[in-house]
Image 1 (cartoon, rainbow, N blue to C red):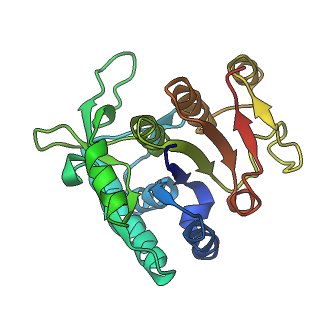
Image 2: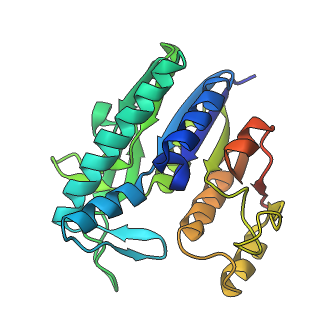
Length: 259
């Protein structure tokens, strides 16, 4: 029987606000067994860009990253946000280690080809060094992964944190029973964004298509669900979208299912 591995991707206001982040890290520290935390930090990056007079652009929830934006997201994701999370986990007795995709050659990516949209220095993942992650987990470390990857030729790339969490989950599913949790401020995927009680309990691929067509699932939720279904199709056992309270209450949220 394979050991369980819990991968939590945290973003939105949860990672941006001190109180909500501290609460999440406290609950995360209580999760038994192997675990990995993947984080975003897009709002902080956007605010810093605005202060510096750099316009932030997104398409379907994915950030367009020019050279100046790449500097900002690297500073924010790999620096401020990552180390705040690592320090917070250490305070709860977790032997956390902060990483980007460049560290230990953890996540190799290629710059996204220019098509109808030029995403700039955005990386599409090509390989995950699951052996390095295995060694870290075996040693008792808890990886905290920032959404910065590299191309193997010295170029850093910005990669969607939801995609990183999904790719890590898929790579590790050969050795572990993996559950992938997307944690945000909402209780799950909502029929009505203003009503937290309108949570959808389960979403199939067919329902996902319908929710997009009806304009219920938009923006950053689209890549989140796309990546979640990709993970299920590649051997990940459980994918749930929830908030910190849902993690604490036994994964109460929106569960993605294939049928």
